Image (cartoon, rainbow, N blue to C red):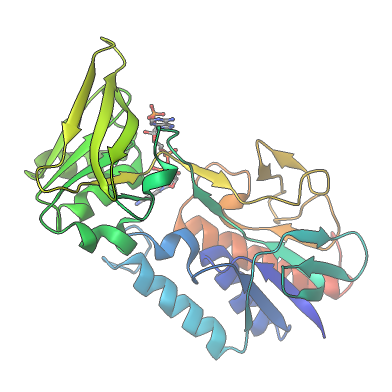
Length: 310
Ligand code: NAP
């Protein structure tokens, strides 16, 4: 089968693209490597998406996926590793399958950036996590550290105070990057404290994480914190890397992000990008779904032969 629109990534941008493609009566396939919702699915609380007062990212993403499926979008599981995007029929390959489509929307999002601390990889799943919604409850009553100072770190740190005995946010500067409203709430949270001008250099332990080595960047002082209860948590939110493997040399990239115009067109005819993987000034759910809608409508126009006319 040759789909009208194949969408790489099932986050808000990809799901919105599939919804708009289906409503334009185009066959649409969403290829997602893990869970529907992408980074949104791993977000504790969403309260800046118009019309949603406060809700878990997982619940919002679930409803988006359900809505898409209701309109007849197809879903496939897999990680697209190879792209053939130049002809009229484009091919997307995963380890298990090949999918063909007249147009492609790349909405593959971004993935968490590792901190680079010694021992980090060793303790992932045994104390270290990049997803508070997924792993927060495992740290009930324990001490939890959070690395980062942006919206994700502050928001997820506050979420983690629901479970942890105490949450300590370690930031490399003396002021946060996160939005003012988040900062105000974070400073008012009695279970949340801050270690400024510092980075976590090493994760220590046996079977599980039970210690961290922290360096103060201003003084050079090294300190060690140990778990009182034999285990502690470290959640890392220091930014994200674009998922553009296999696209280098094929699609124009800028620092790994896909370059598009305002209609979400890439440098290749019939290939569009949407959401966080795109070079853009504001990465939010609201901008991701807008990108997806625009990309789908442009894909529809491309199939109609309207090509680049806007
Ligand atoms: P981010 O905004 O890029 O923030 C990354 C944070 O990690 C910064 O505070 C940065 O420090 C720190 N950092 C970077 N590299 C580091 C390193 N090697 N060691 C220690 N610290 C390091 O990333 P994000 O918070 O994941 O957010 C990503 C995007 O999603 C942003 O556009 C954000 O606005 C958006 N987002 C929005 C919401 C919301 O609106 N509710 C929620 C989550 C995310 P510096 O400050 O010193 O650079």
